Amino acid sequence: MAQDRQRVVLDTDGGVDDLAALWFLATHSEVDLLAVVATAGARPASLTARNAILLLDLVERPDVPVVLGGSGPIGPVPGIAPVEMHGAEGLGSLRPWEPSRGPVRATAEELLTDLTAREPATLITTGPLSTAAALIDTAVRLNAPVVMGGVIRRAGNALPRAEANIARDPSAAAQVVGHPWPSPGRLVPLDVTMTTTLGPAELAALEVAGTAGATLRRMLDHYRSYAPDPGNFPCHDLFTAMLAVEPSLAAYEPLPLRVDTGESAAWGMTVADLRPARTNVSAEQWPTWQIATHPDTHRFRAALRQAAIPNDR
Image 1 (tube, one colour):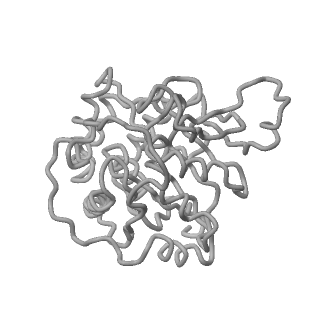
Image 2 (cartoon, rainbow, N blue to C red; image 1 turned 45 degrees about the horizontal axis):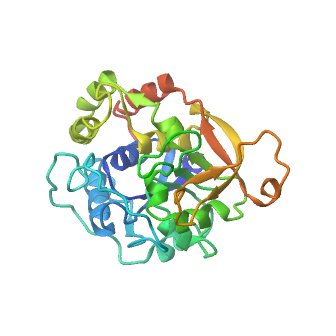
């Protein structure tokens, strides 16, 4: 029933795995996708919005508004090398086509305040947290967010100890992590997304999943070519979207968490207190987040294949 569907807002920076996450959320029968927020990251917010609209056109969801979010970081950022895996336009090797519409004229705060006036929504972030930080302490009613970002026990991908979404706006990430959410937020770090992969069977399922699935598969062909093993490749944002809908796809470890904004060697690092006996102030003053661990790759792949089967919304 409609009232049982999960109310979500996707905050994205418009790369290929972001579009895979959007495809999943926009076509899932148990998800009420209220809006897409286009936040600047590796590409401008306007391009991110266009890519979201192109995908929504393919899945015939003109009812989902796309709104421009943050146009850049709210604080200092480290230098990060550009990424090529998403392609010049964020569509893999595909060239953009004409979208059916543009983003709505309202601000993200105005749109989401209206959409959450009666009931809160869960914010899923798959890009920098610039917009999410701006929405804190506004009239927008949000549940604890699900954040794709960070590293806990492994190396980063943007910097030695920093993941790209966090490193593109560490100040915003620090605000979101430090906010007193009504319940602990969920962090989906590279520790789990790098090991949760898709393979040939999932690509084959997308190929026969209508125009949207086949187009997404072509984007993923470019995206996966940059993976260490293109035959079994991670799709970070898709796994995060699935985890937001089905939390049991992973286990969780509650850990005190902060983001390093000190412009040092650890700039942009998600610093978790991993000590077995926490005796100093961090245990009391650092916010606790639920850190995703031990992902179920078998179920992740099965969920993708299931999502590729056409269904009536």
